[in-house]
Image (cartoon, rainbow, N blue to C red):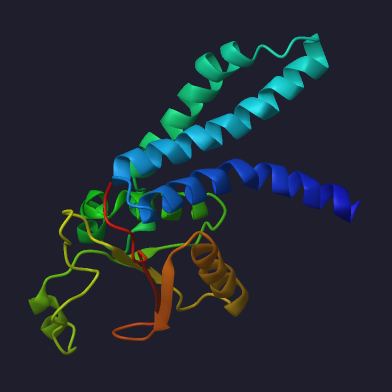
Length: 206
């Protein structure tokens, strides 16, 4: 029973993992971010097409790979990625300012945080974009450089997620998720207990 449940869980998670890992690996290898996300989407689509073809073969005797890939899987993946990249529910941001800054966040971070929010209903982004003077406002020493500042590509490369008031199990799983998908994490206090998530280093662009 446990083995069967584990297999189902792996099958459910595999398309999301393929999307995230594929996009992260391509980006770290130097591909432009939108191409990297597109490649991750293609990989995830391939996994879903495999699932759909197997189910079609099982139920109708025909795999219908091309039809399933173009008419069902591709639109589904595109809608999912568009939603992750463009929309953040108000209840998932600490403030209106954070909500408005969402599209300034690097696309890989947007896809990653939107994906984990599917299962972690309590995940809340507390901080995104900052300017040097914001640190003084928070009573902290100003930083010469920060992943919270807009970087050379125009995007913010870090976000903070609330950990205060959540169990160590939830926070531990959240940290593990971001590390497994290739991001850097740092748990620290600052103005409030939170998990700092940032992009890793990457190779030069192709």
